Image (cartoon, rainbow, N blue to C red):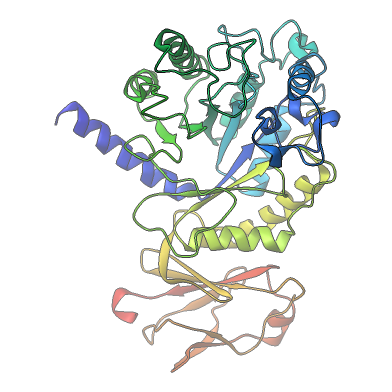
Length: 443
């Protein structure tokens, strides 16, 4: 088997592993989490053309940038406790982490040697803290809890002098010079990116996913030499999944629809919906959080359509998770402890998602998940599971209940006779799962 075939075989195996995880935590965190900038979302307002990121703000963009890039001097998250974050992720039922090691603003949340604009820099008051290399502290804590590790890295870097040349206007998110006309400057930026990727791949233990953002950095105008970049990364992390998101091609190993769930199942390629727990990616004390029911239904919808849910949390500037986020994560975890076998290591099952029903399967076991409306806490009895026919000797269980359910097959589907005591107080809120033991001939 040649080297290319070996790499493809490894990647195929790793993507099946990824499909099994189903639920992950994303964290957007940096100096932009501080009070002065909470009305904005992460570092996006630095881009002059992206006015959506500066609602109700007017002023000199260059003065804004000067103030923004000084936020490192006041970023001091003294309440950051990586173990608590990792333990909360486990309690929520999450299986992997994607952490923003560097966002568009170019601030490094790790101890890079290639920039002084970093969490461990002398200008940042947090640099004397034992957890100052936040990426190292976080990865160690999550790895101890046996969660997979993913690195978010922005290919664009608005702080780099090789991306936005100083003293030259930058009107948009792109480099502020002609990279074709000045290839020597662009090559310095390419070398910088490759150098940082090598740092992240060699200093921070086993890495499972490299999640590359800023999809507009792509050929032909902005060639990062992805062949070399990935070769460097996989030299040290041979099992690495690479997500050159929105670019396509051989280095977008899985798809990442952002802030939405596809209307139809995506079955041809692994995918992951990344979604904030509220409306904003970074911390905002006035953010409106999704309800617990919305979040559980979101997870079920994504999994039934063949994807993973990457749920984003924006920590506070002091290093703590907002109480609203903690409450929701704990409630999701309670639900998963009862219904997790219908989520993890499953694959989508026709008809996937129809109205209040979602379907998954593992081998010849089918899971029918009934989504309750927000204000409903009881189950109807009898309850019809539509779209499925099963063999007469099949057994059907409501997860969280030891005894099998009584049922009959009719033209509408499977009629479940739920005992009144269980229907009035089902084992799980928000959604209940029926485990149907069937076989291929029973559909």
